[in-house]
Image (cartoon, rainbow, N blue to C red; front, side, top):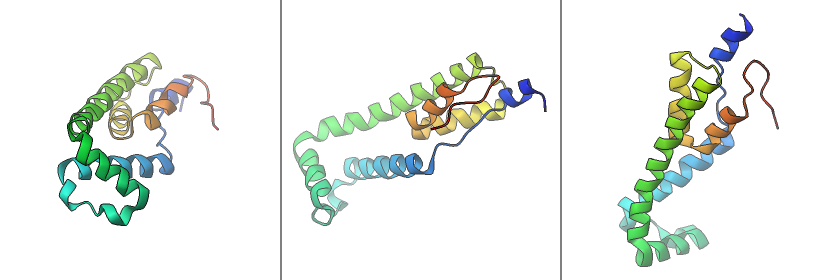
Length: 125
C-alpha cells in the first residue's frame, strides 16, 4: 500500500477507557433526565446525592443541557469530517467511522484525529 493510501484510510479507535467513561456518563445523564424517578439515588453515594440535588433543583438546566450535549457532539462529528478532508482522509468508509465515533465519544475521538499527521505517524502517548 502506498503512503497516500494509508493516509486516506487512517482510523484509530478511541481508547477503551474513554469509550467506557463517556458511555457510562451519558447513559447515567440520560437516565436522570428522562427517568429520574427510577434512579436509586441512595445506593449511589455522593454521586447519587449530587444527581438528586441537580434533578430536584436544576432540572430544566439538566434537560436542556442533555440536548445541548448532543448538539455539541453533532458539531464535533461534522468538524471531524472537515479535519478528515484537511488531512487527506478521503475514504468514504473511513470518514464515516470518524463521524460516528466522534458523534458518540466527542473529544475522545476528535483528539486522536487532530493529532494525526498526514503522511507521517501520529503522536502516541
